[in-house]
Length: 464
Picture 1 (cartoon, rainbow, N blue to C red):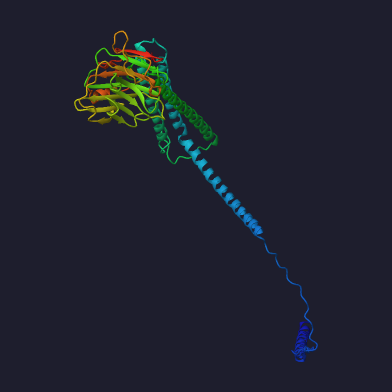
Picture 2 (picture 1 turned 30 degrees about the horizontal axis):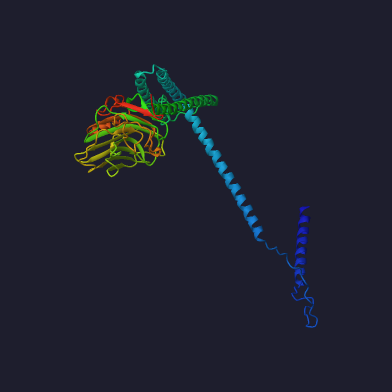
C-alpha cells in the first residue's frame, strides 16, 4: 500500500509547482496612474475654508499673580510637610536617646540631686529660723542698736550662704549630667543597652521628672528667699543710722523756721578746723545749707552746702569757695552721705571729702584768716541778718526767728555732726566715713555729737 501512495504524493507535488510557475508569468505590475489627474486653469477649484485652531485667551496681571500665589502655596505646603517629617524623625531619635540616658543614669543622678537639695533646704531653714529668732523685738536700748548691726551682718552671711549653695547645686547638676560615668553610675558601661521592658524605663523617667520638679521648686524657693533677704537688708540699712549712732536730727520740710541752733562750750576763734557729718537729704535745691557759722559783720564765715549734684565749702564769704561735683545723685534713692570740710589758715588749703574720699582741694582759700568768736552756729539754715543783740545784756544770741530763707533750708536727716580745731588726716576721715564702723566713738573737741547742746526749732526734732 505504501508503494501506491508514494507515487500519488509525488504527482500532486509536481502539479502544485507547475501551477505556481504559471501564475507568476501571467502577473504584470503596472505602475502607471489609472485615472486622469490634470487640472486646467479654468477649472481651478476654490480652496475649502478650514476652521481656525483654538487659541488660548490672554491672562491678565491678576490671573498671573493668583497663579504664582497658588504655586508658592503648593511649594510652601511641600516644604512644611518635608520639615514636619524631618522633625518627627529627629524627635523620635532624640526621645530614644533620652530614654536610653534615663535608663542608664537617671536614677542615680536623681537620688544624688534629691539628697543634696534636701540637705541644702535643711541648712537654709536652720539659718532662716536662727535669723527670725534674732528678728524678735527686744529692749529699745543700746543693745538694740548692737543687735541691729549684728542682724545686718547675719543677713549678709545668709545671702552669701544662699549664693554658695546655689553654686554648689549648679556644679552638682553639671557633674551629674556630663559624661557617661557621672554621679553614682560609674559602674554602667557606655555601651549598655536600653532595658528590655519599656515599662521600667517609663517608670524611671517619671521618677526623674518628679525629682527634677522638686529640685526646681527648691531652687525657686531659695531664689525667692534670697530676694526677700535682700529687701530686708536694704530696708534695715535704710532704717538704721550709720556708724553706730543712736539718734539723728529730722528736718521734716523746708521752712524759714525749721533749723537747729548749736551752742558750743568753747569759743570758735580758730585758724583751722574740720567739720564732718552724716546727711540723708530728701530734697536738694541749688543751694541747701547744712552747716553755717557767722557773726554780725560776716554771716558767711563757714558754710557747708549741697547743690543739685555737688557739695560746696566757703570760708569767710562766697569769694573763697571750694566745690566738688557729682557728690549727690538727685535721681536716685535717698541714702546716707558722709561729708567733711577741712581748712587751714596757714596755707589757705581747703578740701572737701565725700564718703571718706577727697573730692576737691583748693589752695589759697582765706589764707591768714582767723575765724571770729561770738557768732551763731546753725544746722539746716543760714542767718542772713545775723546776730541781733539781746535787749537785756547786749550780747549775741542764737536761735532767732527772722533772717532765714526757706529756699536754702535743709530737708532730711542729719547725724554725727562734729567739729575739730585742726585738720584731720586722711586715715581719720576715712575711718569716720565707714558705715559699719563705730564712728560715734570719735567726737569733736569743739562740737561733739551727743555732748554739745543743740536746740531744734520750728519742727526740727531728734529721732532714734
